[in-house]
Amino acid sequence: MLILLVEDEERIAAFVSKGLQAEGYSCVRARDSGEALALARTEPIDLVVLDLVLPDGSGLDVLTALRGFKAGLPVLILTALDDVSSRVRGLDAGADDYLGKPFDFDELLARIRALLRRDQASGVELRAGTLRLDLREHAASSTSGRADLTVRESALLEYFLRHPNHVVTRTQISSGVWPYDSFSDSNVVDVYVGYLRRKVPWPADVRIETVRGAGYRLRVS
Image 1: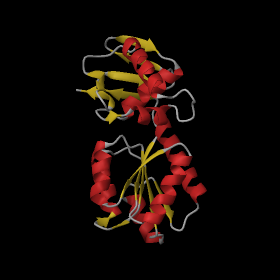
Image 2 (image 1 turned 45 degrees about the horizontal axis):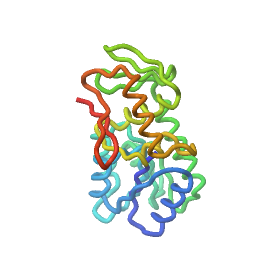
Image 3 (image 1 turned 30 degrees about the vertical axis):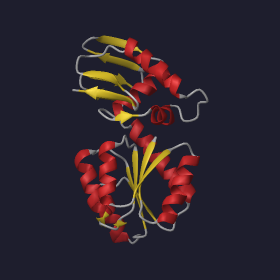
Image 4 (image 1 turned 90 degrees about the vertical axis):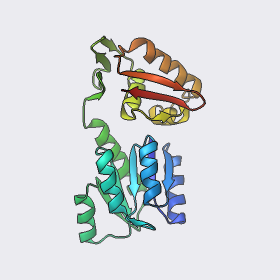
């Protein structure tokens, strides 16, 4: 899972980033609004931890912009603005959760886990173009047919479907799909991508592309 941390204070950013990575998450950091939106547009972000007080504006503006092009992306506000009116404004603006500073890292981590669980359980089917993945049955289907997948194959296809048209590295895939598996190296990623290419009934408008020197991209036209 890749988490975007939007935080301009170096000490807090280093503390949170180190803690998230120790728990098996990947983390990218933005220091201001512009950098945050650029990363959200170009990286396969799974969740955002967002400060409201940024050098170039309000985190609420970032939140509003995110909701414009990534409406379902989970956002947790982490800020020193912890009065009731600030919490109400943040949640009304579209935040999924709100935690004031100072904070306990274990609580932050628990809230992140809860948001990710809720996001994954929010639907039983994912779609890209005319390709569908049934998350309960671990089955991929399209106008070309249907295929039953293993749990690992289904998890990999789910990752691609959650990040359409983004280039994802093998490291990102490993940490996002198999964060605690000892076998999740780049060669295994290549093997499982090969399984998906052979088993999934790919429609004409969806395919997995190899991006030389970078990784893979689920191309949806």
